[in-house]
Length: 518
Image 1 (spheres, rainbow, N blue to C red):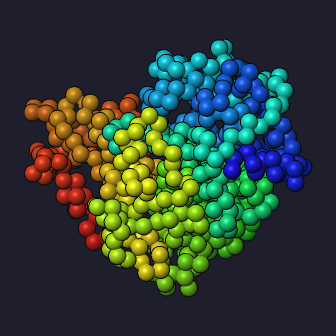
Image 2: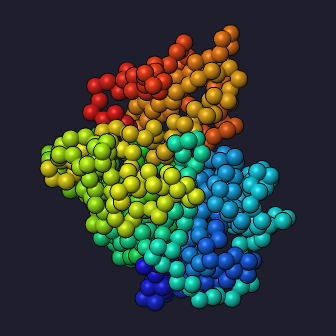
């Protein structure tokens, strides 16, 4: 199985069908295939070899899709950059997997000088914008125009397709290695669940560097869908685009669903075309589901649970359980059942399966599981011990096979669909000259699920405010990781082994809730 397989099929069966829509720019599947083959030739012409890594730092666009497919066609490996990261974080991810070529759009041109300074590996920068090509950069469009199309290299199976960086438990991002086969099987699974339909039109409003968007993008390719791109999520633009382009499928995290259906213009747009809404990262409140189903009467809602290391989906909660009748069965707070190509179990600390209803760690195996972490053999062995991907999420499985997430074993916060590892934030906070120690936890938030909260111990005689802590962190980590609140204490609660007892810090915020995570 290979990730360009769907493009070959679409160009054969539906060459005149619209493949991509970005603003006023529309291209057919025949045109997309031609551009992808030419881009692959252009990448090889500047010296890229199979397995070489290519990065992209850009907002959503048709060129982002061409980057993925062109890199695969050339036999190369993608490394899409998280657009919300700081230059320091992006440079680390580029150097970590030796990404020599980076494609940049207009939005991120101001970051180029700092990336050139910080990322020693970078040798080529490609401009994928609509203005004049900056000095010292190659033009994405000129490269395609000047290159002859080349045959598909045919990378497949466990051949490396991408290195996708996630937050790290040590404070440094980890590169998740995913193969062609795992990503493609996951796409087939999403399509088979009914979340995409043949020939329909899908919206890319969630960021395209994210594995959730990549998974849906690949499923849409399987079904030869039309891809409509918004540079970034904005509820008003989503409403306008659904009506204008007759969008049938959209991936939106719960906060995006809420912001879209609660937008003051929601009733002014014809949203009847929308058939499938996929969401993940956290459950959606029943109140939001009620409002969403009223505003989107023809839409089916799918919740997917997974992670980058799983390519990404492992379970899915199907539309029936979102309906009033289905909710009576008590599954709406679950993450659904295992998808067609994932085996899911609940293990105890000894990696033995627990009885149904008991809480343990959610583990997954199947073809979508990662190949490993880039140059981190110890982390890989720990995560994949016994052949199972240990997710770090605590959950239970009921008698019907539905998985309920109750807590996180790994020290991670999910805010607005983005993962934040506490160690990353703690490393940043502790670089403040007034800070002696700190612990970072997630606290509940109605809009974002969780927000980042810092518990800080100051050095003797030192002073700092919550605002000063936040401003300090903004220069070191992405804005969504910055503590939204901070409190100052004399000491942190410690175990006998000297470990911070974060459960003690979390208790006052999560008391009385069914789940201990947002």
